[in-house]
Length: 101
Image (cartoon, rainbow, N blue to C red):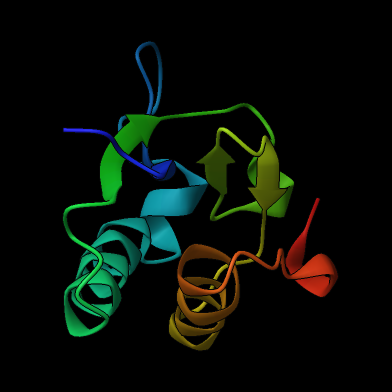
């Protein structure tokens, strides 16, 4: 399988310390589920891998999403922002500048 994008989303779990950090309390797990739904609705499942991750250390910008291979970091995620990123970036290849950190 060749993937177009690998999307990494923080769910707020930390390897050391608080196991339910900022991204967790800001619905990080639910946002991962939302992203997977958006990808499935767009029939992009064979092109995109989604991984839930631990803390990136920029909690004040969370929840965080990183899109590779583009190296684009998104912050302050909400369900609406996740849908917009899925449509514009993941489906149409255009990064959403206003959500980048």
